[in-house]
Length: 305
Image (cartoon, rainbow, N blue to C red):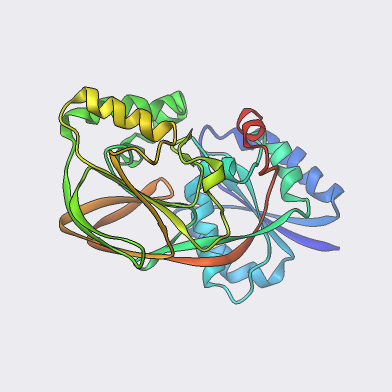
């Protein structure tokens, strides 16, 4: 019988996965898997388990938020063997699941994780840390790790908006030198993301037609400073509608980029705090991990599931 390791973060999001464990295990068993369930015990525990036990299993499934998924991906990148990885989203916004067409329902997501729709995807490295789909800084990203977990649990996606409103009076401009084979630019920016996803903070941004999760390229978007709250609103509208051709942005694709700033910049990696650094070296490892995907041709349905 095939062996499956199910790594579960019992504290992710609202803890919704807790009442669905039996149904999910049953789904895996019906697909022919002998299931081993492991509940994470703290920060980076998922990384350790994935790294140390990957070779024992035919498949690994992660249940948790984007941060938990990042830990499992890191463990697999450090492991000698990388079995296919399934994902049951149980966090606040679950951007990566949306990009993969994975349903929000834990049991439906488990059915996807037990299927054979395999897709090798790119994985990024930010200095010495791996990330799944986005490295970002600035006005729209600082709220993701500044938002208290309790607020996330109670308000869900609205929590980011609540904290975003609070941050409007403290927008920081960062003078940066951005270098890649495709683009070199030096200017002031208030927001930036190096991403491999159609969704950021639970909202769709870049058009699905422009994003390939396995092409070895990241989409880079940098936002120029704004003069007043109205301009900030226009910038947000351009971002949330995927208007990457807006004059408010610098937008290009690359597989490797360095970003240097005069002062420390606070970064997020997959929605979690990624450190305060002056220098960022970001590299795309093409098709590094095989995921089990859902219906990636119909992301609207995945979002509504």
